[in-house]
Image (cartoon, rainbow, N blue to C red):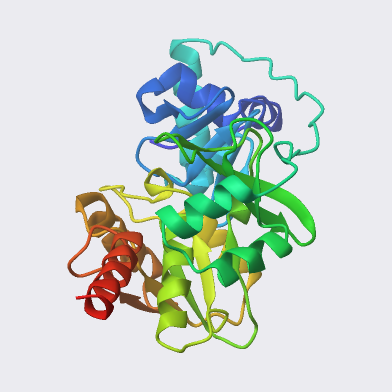
Length: 315
């Protein structure tokens, strides 16, 4: 039978136990390492634990204590949560991780090269993106060539401050986020003149879509566009549909959006991710799923169209 009263001193002791330490001690199978200090919940993949705190991106809720975690995430009543924590602490005293937050260093972009010649050749001649579109984003400071390795850097901003960078090699398959990137500010294009956002797995697919729009005499800047930063950024949880962090944050910042249009890859990962996103959006937004029908991704569709057009012009 549940107790009707728990002394304030006991509640205070319970509140000192962080959600991370609670799971780490009593349910370690629910923690999946996602970096040096970041962990993801095994059953809620938008629920992150870092430096003693937790944040549930899909629900826009967070906290520190195990008590708040059990009530908010697991659905316990306050009394049930207290009793559960007390019972587990009585069986085995928790080992507390002494997390000392280090002063955060300002996010810094990879050093820029003197020119963008190599990435222009790669993006426009190899990936067949429209030069006007590429130069537009270069002028905005959202694309540039890195000094080392000549990578393409796709930049995302928090207002006017760089907060995210995605690195893409022009000679190998290397593609990754730059250290310290905040996924909430992934590479994107925004306009207040459209109430829909087109969503892509990567920046090159986003720019490929804009190129296809221009080829159809549609202004490439007509609609909002968002890159999720790669397939691994897309939620594919079987237990609970969650929005990718980049999309959840973008929708929160842009309250005028009413429609989400998905252009994820036409493979098992992309199909599953699109289904998860549609479920997570529910009836909050109108949502259309428009993957490339006959191709793996939007860039492959663009390449085929350009080559087919050249064949027709030069039979």
